[in-house]
Image 1 (cartoon, rainbow, N blue to C red):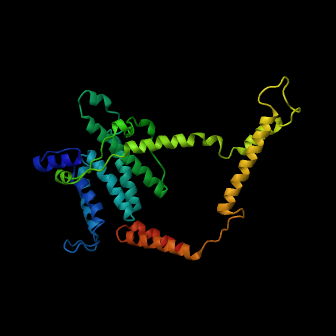
Image 2 (cartoon, rainbow, N blue to C red):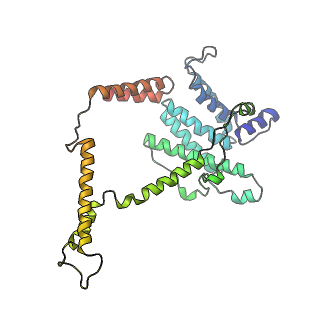
Image 3 (cartoon, one colour):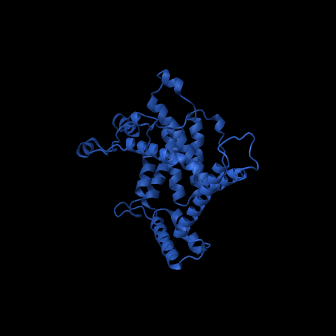
Length: 315
């Protein structure tokens, strides 16, 4: 709906709640983060290109807050990710909180089924409002966990259902790539692996069904049958069940199974206590790879640079 709303706004100059210049600019700011930090022709020094576009989105957002709509919530959600990625944790967390407050203000948390039935809005619009609300909720919860902040949302007020897709094979068609019509004509769509995935899931369930009676149960089998191994002691009168021979057989077979498991374990891992000594060279190689990755990300995201400095301090 974003693309259709953008065409409506660009070609017809009609306002739409599903597109805004602030949202477009904040999307571009995330894309600019993957470009060079300072563009060779578009001079934004000392700011990076990503920060420059994000600042323009913030200025437009201040204007939109006088008359907000769904796209404004989306812009705040994306902007919170940009600011936290640039090590502006407080500002990013505030934007995610503002997005949640605005979502409640626009009644995105309400169930619109009756309005869809009355043709007051389309099902696609209702689905978009639902998705925007739960997207804002997810981002707000994620940043609260990330920053160790408290949660302040009363879920008893939320009536809208959570997004869910029917994954049954009969409802799952072939996936088509999100490209232009021309590219779609030139490219072959990916095959549908949904049926095969469901078949493998069924086979996995059939394989795992009897495992509960075999894995790590042998000692319990011995405990359950050991009192009935005697031919005379503790046997019911008149006789009931398979008798003492069955109890003896179950205990013996379980003991054999335990011994076999020990032999298999010994062959793979030995029975000695595991050593807590690690190869310093291997650990150093893994840490070096992590530091290199964080260093590369740090060119764009300040939060990665902060994580690298913290790990280096611990080291």
